[in-house]
Length: 259
Image (cartoon, rainbow, N blue to C red; front, side):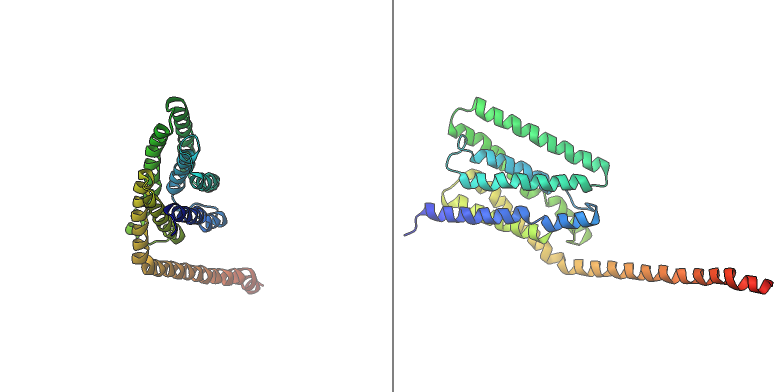
């Protein structure tokens, strides 16, 4: 019979793979931002929240805080560099200076708070239990922030009745990530993993429901927008032709009548 530890390890590896896909899922979004040279209406909140979440979980998984948590360290350590790349691109292509400064300020605050947390844990907490408790509570708060951050985007979806700016891949893998780590936490019960990933599962489900609800309407709105752009192009083209004819008459025919 397969032991619970083996099952837990397998699910943890699967969770690592899903998490990596989740962290890489915004790549198409940032390719679009790069091509258009603008962040448009995309929000930086999910990436800032995810960065904070990953930094804290990487600390939680370190041997001096919570031993035997290598799977937690590997995925969150990798995600830190991925999320920093997204944030840097967002700063580069943000057209609004106030938005750019706001992102930079939030990033700075996150780094300062993380440094304070590391010093507090290593200096004031002298046992694994206390360190795990302190960092674990912060992990729960950051995980909730990460999973709840798309709520702003969900509000935009409901207001505009369009999922154009809520990437499907990000929503899908948020759901899958919450499911995998929630299952992982239940096998050998870990309250610090169960609470945030249970909420992540809930928020991910909500995003998928919104996507299913407004997907057809989004296609209709995009088709109408494209049709308007084509019509506008045709109107501009038609408006240029009389000008060219008038110009020819003035420069060609008028002098001939004068001679």
